[in-house]
Picture 1 (cartoon, rainbow, N blue to C red):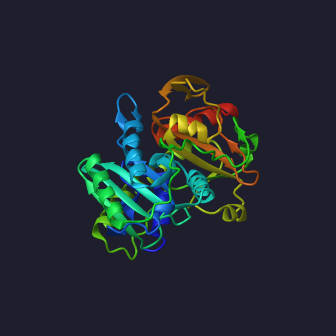
Picture 2 (tube, rainbow, N blue to C red):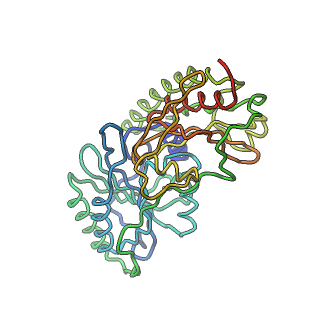
Picture 3 (cartoon, rainbow, N blue to C red):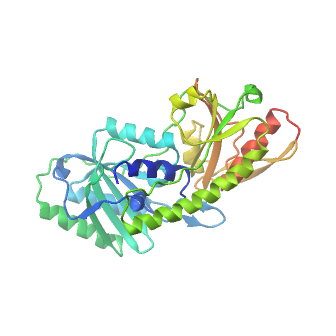
Length: 359
């Protein structure tokens, strides 16, 4: 199972949009063992709650959920200095790197996953690995589950008290500190597309399959099989949609910056997925505090557009182009949409119109 969690988190961040905990794709040892220095170490919490399905699929409101969780953690002496919605952690590869860097800067020692699932609530705590895999390979994880949140937190508290550790966390904040969208723009945000795209090949990363080699846990294997079936279908759709891109492109497997440069890929297609307001924050847009929704520009070929207002909490996808040498980010119009297929079509259409191409 070693190395598997890293691959899983990369792929989940790109593709997996079902509401299931991140740890559904990795084996770990379920125990009642409380981390030895929990009472004196800092903890980050990654939470998952149900989405809201109305006119738009939106992130759930975590306010009451987190207030109950944090109050219980304060009573237990757990210094949870950050709370992070899992959809924001998996928003993109760069988002994960930004959050992990923050965790390391603030000397996080433990990671808690607390999730509301179809059958109830789950709690998992393990040592923080210091990398985007989040937990160390083969970790013993303190695990609890219950049909309701009160019972879950009560049972967690009983085990923490039974461990009878010395408490040194006396400055725990009274309210949960919920992380917002950290910037994933490495250099400069540019609201256009460069004309050099007419003469440059665009690298388009295909969605990644998960490797099930050496995995014996049947439940994890079934999760991977289901995931890979979805990946294959999305890659088929990607190949069809990208055909409308007006310039040269190549569909590639994900690769490092060094490999992109070695293969002379100057531009790379990327995307980010989260609530509309978080996506804007991650891409360094200014977001007025009272803004309730954002207007997406939807291309109507060949040279017209229409507008689509999407609420700030609605889950959207936004595609952009990264210049691999300068690391500038070209976003063009704000054309985020509720599915990755629509968002990609929007980007291609707006890029085509901006660069004055007649199809």
